[in-house]
Amino acid sequence: MYMLQLLTKHLGQIEIDQNKVLQFEFGLPGFIDENEFVIIDLPENEVIKILQSTKTPDIAFFITNPHYFNMDYEFSLDDATIEMLDIENENDVIIYSIMTVKDPFKDSTINLQAPIIINYRKRIGKQYIINDPSLDIRYSISSLSKKGSE
Amino acid sequence: MLVLTRKKAEAIKIGKDIEISIISIEGEQVKIGINAPKSIDIYRKEIYEEIQLQNSEAMKVPENVISLLQNKE
Image (cartoon, rainbow over all chains, first blue to last red; front, side):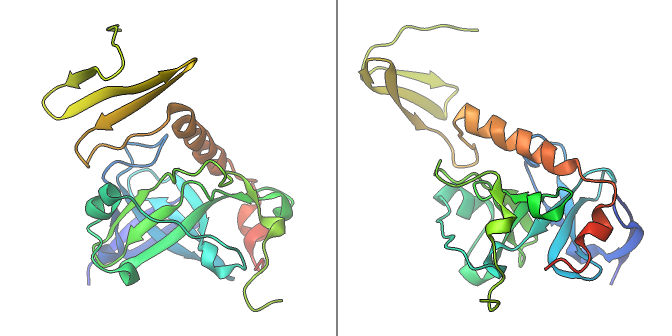
């Protein structure tokens, strides 16, 4: 296992397994030159993680898996995305929403219209824009409740 | 910017792989068909720009963000 020293925006210098690096061929909207990211666990928080650029320490997003929450959220990927992410099996795919964190925390929002789709078997990802204008780009987290907590 | 005038059912070729055709015109609305390689992402511009904006917004976090997120589940 080859370990990579990585300077991160929020957690300082950390060590990560090189095999955990994810390729984002076309970057993310607004950050098209950021082609490599890693997902880092946040201490003392199982629900929120960090999507950190390996190239630019200052570029990092907080992300959460929307399926942690009680919420109807289902969509299909278009053929181009399935091909681009080389998806053979639905089970290889993991979905995250980018969170815009605010203080107080209850004012934070998540982006449901443009989830991060990751084929973790192939280590490739993409921010996918769902062609459904009814999905909220700034969905309030105060309307979310964790699965099993109701 | 190159400006071309097209009628309904006419099309434009961009390079050898991309074809844009005018499907219908109704008042202010134009329905456009696009044939392009799957590797090319096609978006409504205003939606793409809004995602760009929100991504930039998501990068601006409160200074105390890590303590804010600890034990928040």
